[in-house]
Length: 457
Ligand code: ARG
Image 1 (tube, rainbow, N blue to C red):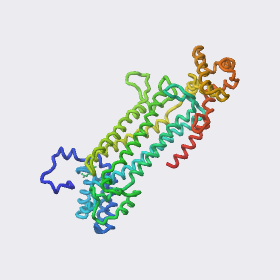
Image 2: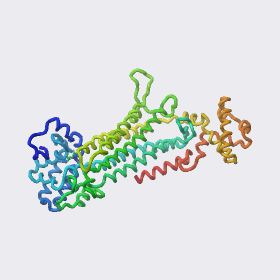
Image 3: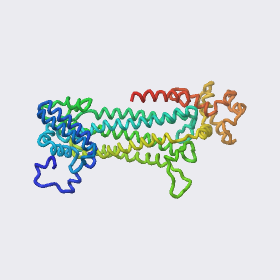
Image 4: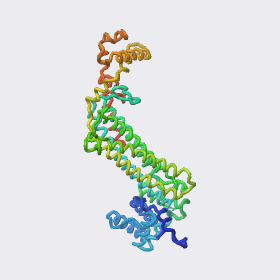
């Protein structure tokens, strides 16, 4: 039975029913819906809007529905949406008392409440997945304090960096994502129940009771906004989009670093794939798929923003479109973050190859310029002198390490014996001991700081 069919003479067309329904996807809200209804019925009883017996019967009936669904004894099917399903089953189980559950409530404040319960829980779930990913990154960072690699700008070798800082960089991004998810939780954790269809309710309800029963931090202050606000959904989708953006960058680096050209990383067979035609191939399908799925998550964010942009106050059915985008985002992000956290436990770093790469292509040129500048040469002049040394090396097909002190002195009399160790990649990385710098000691401090902040999130 439809909750609203009293006003209608004729039944809706079957295709209209199919188009209108949301049960096929909002059944995911069953637990939130029943929990919210239990709180609502309890509050109605306490406020004497319904009798205590009625309230108890409703709560008992709702709990029996919940356990039957969880035990697979009751299939969620046959109604317009999850709210209609629960209410109809309730009435079929407890009779007339069940018909009082919807007193002082509308599906509009009901669905907004259910969804907030769902989203706040989901934000915590995603956060815990991101935490595991950070732990995988930290494990790698801790294993490679003594290794160096080239750092890149414009995807050209720039300066040598401690390998740990590569992983720390991603851990920092994901820490911000955890922080954002905490914010999403806070945004979602406000209760709209009591807003009715749009105008609140004239029954003597006590919203504080339901708020406390449902663990909300606060309640909405304007019913028109309460039933139609979906900012928390947009915030969730944005937080997930940022996670995917960060993950996608990590994918890109992983894919590049596993190429024959870079050869910095090898993904274990367990997380690699092959080619049906080229027997030699070992493909990075997992990072490619994750990178690809990023577009899908962004699409959901754009979809929701577009859905909400033109709707007049207050509730409009457009808002039913808030769910599938969120459910798909949730599944996608959890799968992507989860598989990446595992895959990272199954990669090997080719430290020797990375170190060789860190020392080639004049990555320590800045160190030569700094050497001169620290000894009084204006940095701009030091830059020009070093540029000449680079040109000389290119012409002679040499590296900085091939030059003798005498060679250096032909470019500036300031150079001394110690320039020979300055141009070493490892020394270069380790000279940047500034907070967050490329040195091994900075990387250790960064790891310690990430671990500290992780505890607070
Ligand atoms: N399935 C609906 C949704 O998700 C529930 C609210 C229906 N409200 C209404 N006034 N038709 O938005």
